[in-house]
Image 1 (cartoon, helix red, strand yellow):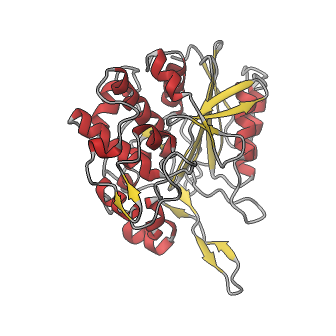
Image 2 (image 1 turned 45 degrees about the horizontal axis):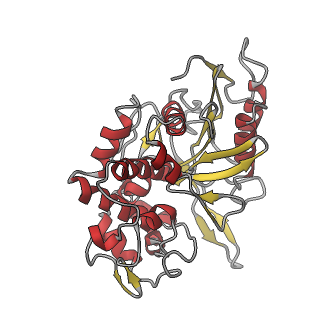
Length: 381
């Protein structure tokens, strides 16, 4: 756990009296995210010497309140790392194999339009090399303001998500390529439930959340609410202009939302403190046995820059060596993070929007937050 956490800054980039000088870089980096369209930002860095936490911008655009220092937030696809680690614990116990086929556990479920669960392994699900199409592509209401307002409290069952995906042909034959697909982790969660006879939420909580003392991490199921304290989550939905150009509508508060459509692929809630503790515990061997951690860190190339993908874990090069992470993007929130391979330094970033719009009218790329994470992990903040 954190030995020391120095709170820094408010919304103007100022550094609190007595804070370490190195925290100024972290504060400047957080301020850059706000300058490029993020309503608010919360960052926590943990090092062997303790921790530093900074914030910038606003957590509530109506009241102008800053992001709470101990804010809870939706972590989106960072959920995948929790789920993968839970499945790998079961692999270590001999209860399933990474080479088991999907059909071994979910017979007949993945079939049609060239999709075949007999040819897809658990490893391929966790590594996004299955070729399965993306079920979210069949949910256009998620990305349309009117549709979202209509469907924000709708429950999506995992089986229905898989059926949406199977309307399309596979992206490639299993094991011959890489493509990020939430369908993989919907199926992985279903396999976890078949192996254990309990929900994925129960297993993740019993095996990871409680043993690590992640007291502010939860699996909300169909509940649309985020436990207090939290920032408000905001989005801007796209719209087509009269000339066919794509712009963005005014900001919408999307905090209250049934997250079941994310399920085991992206529905969890956590904090910067808990996220850091989980990443450090994962790297220092408190979550997985060495053989399973090694499997999790075995990567394949991706189509996304220099990143490589393991089993629910992303590996990226930095100026000071490899870092591991898994970001998450869901309505109202972006989570980004990173941890050094030895687990000694980690950082978690929460932004209270999925769509930070830069001054030029475009959605802010991840470049500024990637720079923040590298500065934090390489000791330049």
